[in-house]
Image (cartoon, rainbow, N blue to C red; front, side, top):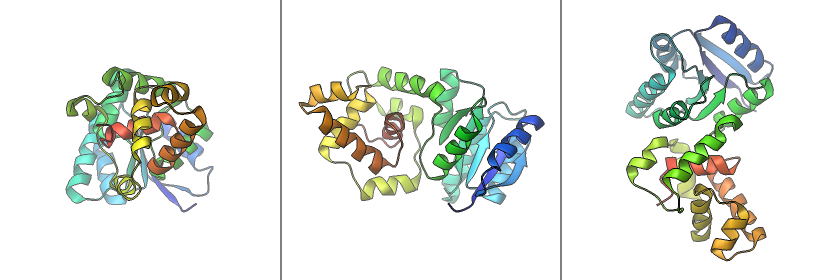
Length: 239
């Protein structure tokens, strides 16, 4: 794997040391900078252009969600979308999680995550997919089910909850569009249906549904159904 340049934005010294120690166990991971507040973090994001930035929500001068929103606006203005943003926090509340995705976060991890899972989260985020901590995955899906109880989309105002998609992923979706049947399956994934329920609703075998799910995950470049559901809403795929 090529080198992954990482910026750590965290106001607690001991936490920064721990993050650095965990990530530098991997030879391909290079900590290119550290910031103890949002103002310094934004400047380093602009100047260092890291591949991935880990951002604490509880920064002293600006919370990590607002930092994420501010930097995403900067990226949109400069058309420089190379840096991926990974929220790293102790906050697992629904409000914090959804606000982070609404601001444009790529991934969301809890600070008590195991070191190997943190490495996996950074690698997955670097590769262009969203990594969602298992501790909050059910929360994200629950919100999706509330917004789309019948597998049909709501208004654009609901989709904006987790709006914002990496242009590279958008181009991949355009190059490898989902088939009509894959779209049917994806809508039911967003609605929270398991494979058996999808098979029942679409009059398919469970094996066929599994094949479609694999195709969806491959085309969307995601690792699991939760990531597929989040990306579907972020990209506006569910109509």
